Length: 535
Image (cartoon, rainbow, N blue to C red):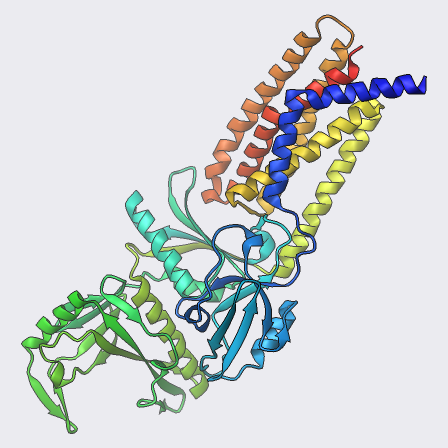
């Protein structure tokens, strides 16, 4: 009898794995697992991004291409120190001396970097953003990885083309400013209002407020004639290294009054030939004056930032009518102490350099909402979400066991629930979707929807077992499932736009999850039940 039962069971299993619906499900499951690439033993420190014009960039290190978190370059050693954790990286970089060189070895190449000079209260910054190595190709969203979310609103209505320009300018500005893992997208609410959503991993509010909110309109004028503006069209190069930028040694720091210090900064830029020619035309009609033994033109170069005069630069007499492509920009910072003034000068220099590189935004933006989440809190969120997911599956399993009391129903149903989660995560890995708390909530909703559909399929299947109308019962069950799917799909569409796009993660994972379930997983479950209960 045991042999007969075993042969019968093996025969049914063979039929199950020959079913095209089951084979389709297995194919997509394999593809999803390949896309996720679970790698629990992947340890170490990886390069998340490289700051433009930094020591790392000049040494040839490149920002990772969008191939997934597992494609990031691993740092194996810095000089003679092995790098296995973030603490190892911090200790190795803190001991570096400005002006020296450092050798960084990764899993793909070895690089020699110049350690840059640093300002007051600054630490050595090689231009690298690093993070612990990922254990899968799933991208963590802001709520889990930590960082800041900024919701910007244009102060006037913008066209689609202007919105593209704004997003491109903000992306370039944030990358130049050294901020990594930036996700910028346009969004609207249900009333049609326009917004720009920015998610930046690993930074605080203070680090991004000025960068994203300022229009950054830079103009250089001579006698009220604009000779060049910020942006790649007029400014071909902006120096950001210690050799040609920093605190101005000629101006130094001085005390303005008993409570205020001032420090100057400088950096060099290169103009395009067209901008240099405009400057030559503007200086050709100026007169030469003598001052303190120096000869200058009678009108200075005036620098305006957001229509406010920030500095004036004397123009040497020998530049009259000359198309000079290399000039030096200067400015000043202030503070209650010399240290604060120096830091304010360096911050102002970096902001001005960024605007000169990226140019101004087409319209002014206002900050509608800003949230910051610490990485530690994000990790706690992730642990709680995973725990809730396991509790949900366990509770569902208990209810299904009490309801049907047979492994022929319980095992396939629980396997289908897990399969649908894997399919959803695999699709998210393929398209590079960032999984945040809203996305995880969508996955949990998908599990709940799947249980409802699987119960409908199970009840209709068992009612038709052993009868001639089996296929008719199955078709009726799938009709109910597809009807419920259409309702769920329609209900998710408004959430895609609600809250200025902040609920997109929930809508995305819900739509993807129920779509994979209805099209692939649930028909496979129905086929399995039919084969298991066939006489």
